[in-house]
Length: 99
Image 1 (cartoon, rainbow, N blue to C red):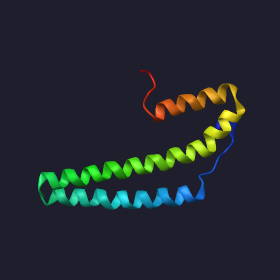
Image 2: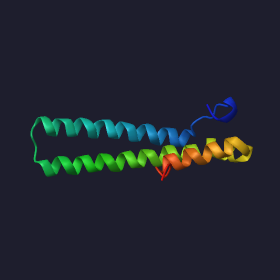
Image 3: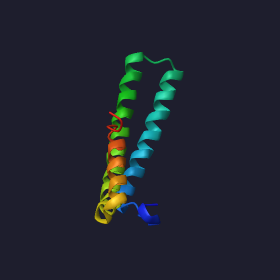
Image 4: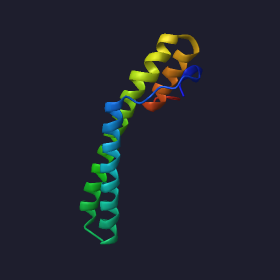
């Protein structure tokens, strides 16, 4: 739900790409679990773990893009409290809140 109770949908292209990214992440996580179970070389596991971090960042970028193009754009247009809420959400998304 967005500001004022309005429902905003995920942009279809972003939804498709985000779901694809989650499928990749699932496979990567299963692979790391198998590597740990098999007691693979630590640096190989770390390399795969870092790849998962990059994949998560890619997913976060897609989700943030959707949020900016849907919710945030509308909230800024509304002004007032919705605009302030959008600003707070963006600060939180970038982990700048409270600093």
